[in-house]
Length: 105
Ligand code: FES
Image (cartoon, rainbow, N blue to C red):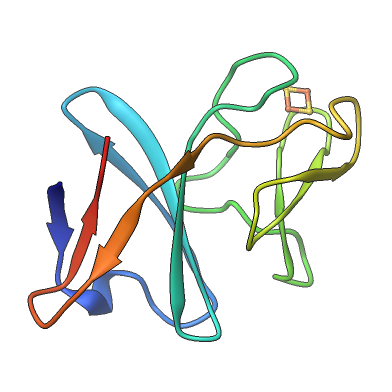
């Protein structure tokens, strides 16, 4: 597991991008739980965000790809709308403890 940082680097109901040894990933915290995915849209295989750390739609309830607007469930990474509907983001195993956030890449 790779250490990402203390828990407060991922604020409540926010998203954030990370670059770990050249691997781009994103984290989203929702209802206290941190979720991690590869930052790679299943549609074109490109990063999801158009501005740093902006991975959520305007309602902050779904992960959004900025290129063609695909929407993904925060809890599972499943695409529920857009050109890659039915596909999913690649889930990364995460962990949170007293030190902070960890992810398996
Ligand atoms: S590249 Fe993400 S929806 Fe097309």
